[in-house]
Length: 128
Image (cartoon, rainbow, N blue to C red; front, side, top):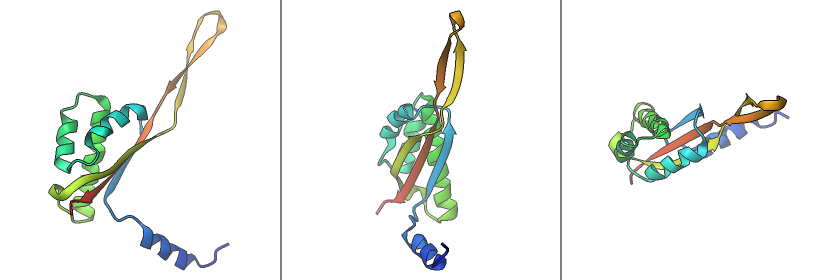
């Protein structure tokens, strides 16, 4: 069961992605709404992406902007990279847990309300 643990961990560490990234989980907006905003900044430079998101009047734009700024801060502080040399290499969202609420209706019936959440992941990379 615990055979070659050191070799396995070395292999995992060699294959690990070293690009700076940031994740935000359990955001109270559906992932389909976030996808629309993410298409605006995918592949853009870091400064352009932040400027676009700050001027987009959308709730999910503020969430995506925070995650991109967090990834930029991780790149600057942890990896020693310059923010002007970064671009949004990958950005994607997934569906998080769904909160289920009930709305009471007439004649003893109940309607179910689904409050969806999402998880956002941003990976930055240096311009070559």
